[in-house]
Amino acid sequence: MRRIARLGSGMIALACASAAFAQQVPQQAPPLPPSPPTATAAPQRPATPPPDAVKPPEDYVIGTDDVLTVSFWREKDLSTDVVVRPDGKITLPLINDVYAAGLTPDQLREKVLTEAARYVEDPTPTVVVKTINSRKVFITGEVAKPGPYPLTAPTSVLQLIAMAGGLQEFAKKKDIIILRTESGTQVTFQFDYSSVVKRKKLQQNIFLKPGDTVVVP
Image (cartoon, helix red, strand yellow):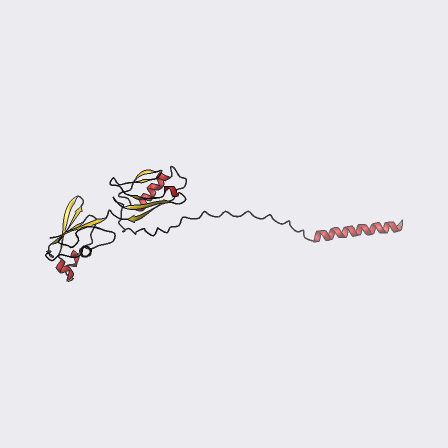
């Protein structure tokens, strides 16, 4: 009986020691489940303009006969090239007629965005100028190639004469005039070709505005 009692006491002591050791050993936390993949932002529309786009002058507004590209990211069926009609409007798929003349490309883009939002969720239109036909200046009289010329960049009177092939033999070089309409009133500017080419009266070599007519008598 004493032997059994000793054995029982030894087993109890061993169990207590094992419990104490278990309390000292830190328990390992179960592995965490893998975190779900984070959502990636939707790719942004590339801002690179098409290769046939032109850079409009700073004061450019859309006019009759201008050629525009109106494109929608992810909505290729709505993207198209359009010509501004004589009534100042363009026609787009689904949206139909939109008034464009007199607006800047950014203003037209905002207008198209508003119209497209009625039919398309989160539309992203872009308006690009392909050809400027509305900004013209005219030269007539004693030049080699009279007629209209596109005004796509700052152009002086002397530059326009050069574009028109230069003056004819009997041109009155000192009596050239520029006709311009301002606020409904026609005004004139003098241009003395002989003096300007001699670097005199350089203030007469003005930059032309759309609609100007240079008359070479």
